[in-house]
Length: 441
Image 1 (tube, rainbow, N blue to C red):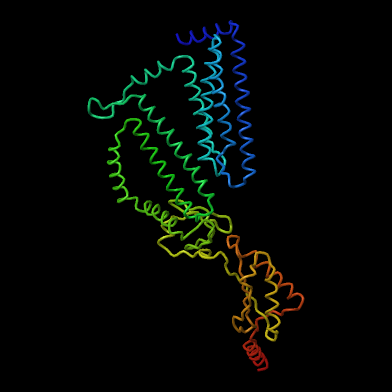
Image 2: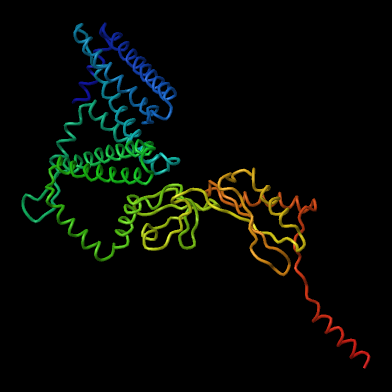
């Protein structure tokens, strides 16, 4: 039995004089591997701190956890070669090598998955469970390899056939299915990681327009994913001509029930290419108003001033009117109205109101604030105090409130007299007179 021979070899090595050398080589490889990985991470952090944002963040802190067992594997191979050259047995070292190889595979898979799916929030329970199952499967494969049972398992999988057609040769083995799943999964994982890294790099190129950066990131990720699927199918041995049938079915689906979905995707690319919207713009669509936080290929996320996020289909931004407050310039005009009583000196009041807006936080100096006489109301002069702000995504309510509080202080000090609605008492007087006349009669 392979397991018996493995145990016999290990016991034989434990009784030989070279056993301490093997244990020492394993311990030295572990210490040196983790030390070199730590130094690599420290060097990368120092480099990023020295160059600032010019150095892209590729997750070196997490990648160092992958480099540690990988360096240990390399040192174990070197130790095995040196021990073999010195006429020592290396069975213990040979057992340690696949163990650390499995640790490399597990940590590398976790690194790639977390870089793709865990960038914008905490990990979900399903994701953590998948990681645990993946680690268990890898450790199980390593156990089969160490004990020598893997060839028997693979022969069983290769001998088990699954029929999928009507012809005699229309069958596939379980080994082929597992190889296809592994190849597609590995290539898709690498494609998603490469797309994420490329997106982060593109989003850091401030010389390009934000919409163009998003469009390039989306297109590059789609190309990488499609390319990985085609390559994995070719590696498995699947004829790519069968995709023509799938393409025809997809065309029929688009024609029958997926027009809106396809329209949203096309609209998303139109928005990104023509740059009618950018991340950070303040827009109003139908009854929704807020800041654009995400522009995806199917939908756009709009964050209102109250923090509530709205997911708008991209078709809605193409087929209907969109009020973009920051399309050509970010500055927007805000205003507050007040009614001053007749008899107030407007030549004194109007410059006084302008002084309240000047110097208020978030109010721009150019264009300068101004006051205009809107109309003559029954209760007084209606004045409009207008001013410009450069950050409409933060709302106008706070600025208007600060200016209104300054105006209130002037009213309290008697500098400004507010207009009071005049009450017409003629009808009331006539009614009272008629009642008095009835009493006397």
